[in-house]
Image 1: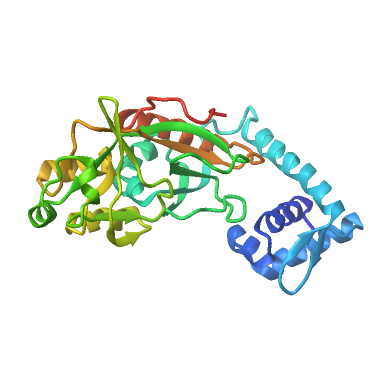
Image 2 (image 1 turned 180 degrees about the horizontal axis):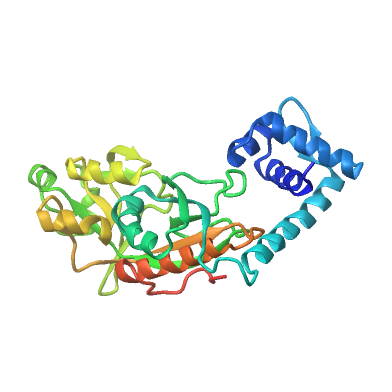
Length: 307
């Protein structure tokens, strides 16, 4: 048995909560993962995991072993990546999950420049607005809008999204153009509701006046790209970051409402698990995202303390 392979398999089973999920994230068969862990337990002469038909739980000895092994594997990676003869260029796989509009509009179009700078970094990119279990799914980092509620994660404040209220000309022709944010609550108006935005209603500010944006909706949706499409189709007014609305305003497909009112910016964070070794490829990706956001949505305020 390769002891380090056994350690890595054990760590992934603990983090993923099952042999099947661990096998999927490591690209191995479930049988191989099971054999590696069994061989490791035989070598140590202790039981690391309690297995049932439904789930896997770490034993008391296994929990102690896990904490030590995570640090050991991180130190081993650091040693290998910083040997005098090792390649100075970052290389390897990054598993990243970002919001779908951010991927389509900002990140993916900019990736050729990143690849030219770091040609040996490979991405497994998830483009979604769902909540990601970074440890269980073996994801290196996520980029998300809004405060990071999981205080166990290391979070880097990378940008602030300027927000506005927008509507399609067809919608305004049918419902009328609201003169005041409070008008969106009138019966003839409707909004497109973004289901992820638990903080609704947003507040708009002008000259000491503050109004909470509310309205009835005919569609609530949980994907940013589909949310934008619903607004373009005239299903209601919607709240968008400037980077999502810019091209559509320029083409006339969207009209900005209440231009003399202000919405507090939405912070953008890059977050990763605290017990993970921050590899060279993750470090350069973080700094590159900071550069990207500095162009499109620079940090303007202090929110959660950056780690």
